[in-house]
Image 1 (cartoon, rainbow, N blue to C red):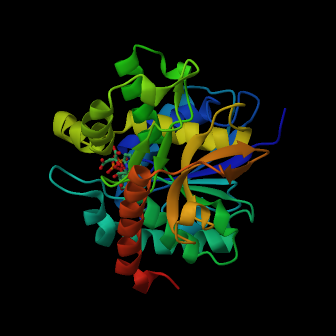
Image 2: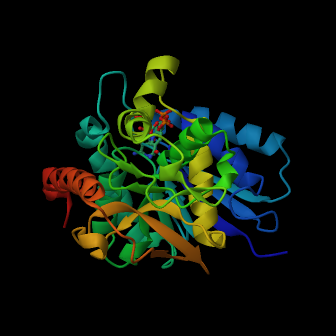
Amino acid sequence: MKNPVRVAVTGAAGQISYSLLFRIASGDMLGKDQPVILQLLEITPAMDALRGVVMELEDCAFPLLAGTVISDKPEEAFADADYALLVGARPRGPGMERKDLLEANAAIFSVQGKALNAVASRQVKVLVVGNPANTNALIAQRNAPDLDPRNFTAMTRLDHNRALAQLAGKTGAATTDIRQMIIWGNHSATQYPDISQASVKGDAAAGLVPREWYETDFIPTVQQRGAAIIKARGASSAASAASSAIDHIRDWALGTPDGDWVSMAVPSDGSYGIEEGLIYSFPVTCKNGDYSIVQGLEIDAFSRQRMTVTEQELREERDGVAHLLP
Ligand SMILES: NC(=O)C1=CN([C@@H]2O[C@H](COP(=O)(O)OP(=O)(O)OC[C@H]3O[C@@H](n4cnc5c(N)ncnc54)[C@H](O)[C@@H]3O)[C@@H](O)[C@H]2O)C=CC1
Ligand SMILES: O=C([O-])CC(=O)C(=O)O
């Protein structure tokens, strides 16, 4: 049996975590041979609710759950963490954009970045889910100067999976028949879901669907899916967000399949002309616990224009939180 790894999760009594924690503990994220210790962070008023979640975790008798720690102090929850899933933040309600949460949530990520810097494993892999996820990841990263900046990522895998589902529905294929989908940019309404590289059962996706559908239906549907779920459910997506967080960390830790890639928001290294340092979603492949941005893709004028719009929004979000970026 492998030694247990430490997985910190914030917002552990919230609705995403209620789907997420049980799947981490069952081995869906890091493999059926990898024991985990869950280190759960909540705010003080939510500690009773968190104790209830831990009672349920115990009652599952998961063979891989090697321990559970709960705390309302980031320095306790992040101690020696190998993975940190930063979920805890306020969700948006109807009529809000995700960046409307910036003011409410940004402070959380500067405090947690400092705590990760102080006590987490030096190799900690960080996934920010709390919105606005890309800019929150930037805040956490910049407050953790002693950690590898590349290990701060934000979640656009839900958008990626939504795009797979939409294209599968339109072409009558299974999501597993689709390769090389891309989400570029921000986890927001400016994101650019790009099928120009994608294939369905080996055929170019762009040749299988009308251009008109792609531009006026597919792109806005994926961009607005979070809002559509809030409208329908009265609460933001939770189970699908949890599932995508599992996918993000699993692929980062265990690797992407040959011949395919996934979308992750990672610090730009200047690839495709995107300003260095922004946490921008790119197509990436993962191997041996590391990711690389896919290089050499051709970018046409349509794509470039959309990639620039979402880059610009990320610049504006960053400039809006300059006081939290040491
Ligand atoms: N990146 C993505 O694709 C997605 C992101 N989200 C975002 O994820 C976040 C969480 O969503 P839900 O679980 O639905 O919200 P929720 O409100 O059900 O749970 C959030 C939890 O975080 C806790 N919390 C607040 N401040 C905290 C802090 N400083 N430290 C630790 N815990 C703290 C709250 O007490 C609450 O229990 C929201 O910001 C939401 O917008 C949601 C869906 C998809
Ligand atoms: O839309 C929201 O506010 C929640 C979220 O990020 C998503 O479902 O993509």
